[in-house]
Amino acid sequence: MSSEETVKSSNFIKKIIDKDNEDGLYSNKVHTRFPPEPNGYLHIGHAKSICLNFGLAEEYRGKCNLRFDDTNPLKESVEYVESIKKDVSWLGYDWGEKAFFASDYFPKFYEYAVQLVKQGDAYVCDLNGEQIREYRGTLKEPGRESPYRDRSVEENLELLERMRKGEFGTGEKVLRAKIDMASPNLNMRDPVIYRIAHAKHHRTENEWCIYPMYDFAHGLEDSIEGVTHSICTLEFEDHRPLYDWFLDKLGVFHPRQIEFARLNLTYTVLSKRKLIKLVEERFVSGWDDPRMPTIAGLKRRGFTPESIRSFADMIGVSKSNSTVDFAQLEYALREDLNKRAQRVMVVQDPVKLIITDYPEGKVEWLTAENNPENEEDGSREIPFSREVYIERDDFMEDPPRKYFRLAPGKEMRLKHAYYVKCVDYKKDANGNITEIHCTHDPASRGGWTDDGRKVKGTAHWVSAPHAVDAELRLYDHLFTKENPNETEEEGDFTDNINPDSLTVLKNCKAEPSLADVKPYLNYQFLRKGYYTSDPDSEPGKPVFNRTVSLKDSWAKKK
Image 1 (tube, one colour):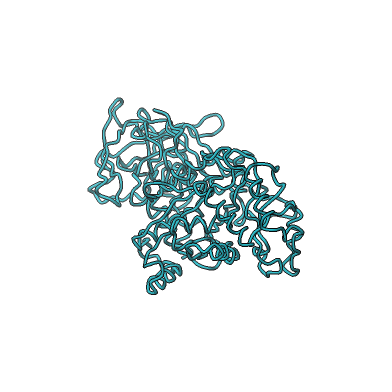
Image 2 (cartoon, rainbow, N blue to C red):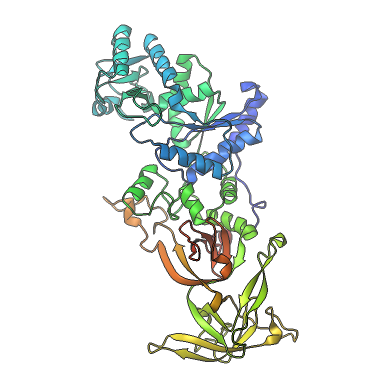
């Protein structure tokens, strides 16, 4: 099944935009944004949002801003900002002349806060965080008003300015919106607008010691930038009344907030807090570990931007939470790699095969097609000699019926080369096969004969004198459970870590064309799967990550 034949999920967001355009709302303009907080690396869930927001802007010939919601200096850094830029660009999207930052609007946010205070819609509160939660109430019980709720406008303005000047300690006071402590929506029960944090910001440094909360900054950023459709994940649905309240109270341009279901994947965690724990507690080697669902990790694993965009298009957007099978992401990758990946030969568990009737010292250069799915990829020349390596499991001393590979007296085809027939073999003291002796059919050069003889078994191989030692890293799911977030009582999601998520094979034998590979090149190792060259590769010492197997479990389910 090709990606073009895949039934795409309906995009309800486009229906909303189309209706807005029909009504002439926003003067038929479409302006979206992707607003990550720079407190970690982006993951596959963010990729879905990136593809959605930038894709809508492209389709409607509008704009999409890359905006950093950098309102929390305690968790944010330049490293995360740069990684986000790199990931968005790698996915193939352009954010225009500049990236936007919430910190650019700090002076304007403060002006809006002062305006709310003057209007009687905000007040300075001395309750600490625990007390604010206690006063907030529950879903069944209304909240209680803060004893500081009825401060005068003049007192609130004075206290807010003193907060701004740094006269109070972290957490000593907050600025809260004055809405409704009996609201059935807990987000409307006098939410905090500003908090004190004496911390150096990665852009504004020590200019500010009070910082706006996300719910306050979010809508104002959209408004300032002229965003028309603010597309958020579903958990922000209950925050939309607050989004609207701030914009209406301040009388500023009012975008439309639309919510969609976030991505959930089997065998994966996408909580940024959990991903940070995996990195900081060294369950993985870093943010770009190929087992991580981060964009950096997927890139290092061998995923392509095209495959991720195709996956996002396949799963579409909806209003209902669901979990996508990780195999569907792999399906999108196979569909892409099948068209672009060069076919090469790498022997993972080598055993030497000696062709006894082939001249010693002779080297032939045989033609091998690079990709049968794409004729434009052409071909390459590979060396063949008297001694080659084959996979150890391509030979059996005592094979079962219908075994079509090599065995005593049996014949097998070497891909692109010759038919060979086993005439002898050697074993060590432990019974392990050390050498396989064969004869070859000179008339079968290229792997075919004119006499109509058919050999069912075909094996990949590498010329022994020309072989390059390669390291292969075989990755599996990082977690053993489909939903690793579900743990036993008092357990932790890391209890579900897969101890076999990484297997390293050293001294594999690769054809010489792979000796000096550049990083992030995709290959199909014949009969073994798709691999990509890792940045750890050195000249003459290539390292490859297994991207995905050849077997497609998701397509079979369909």
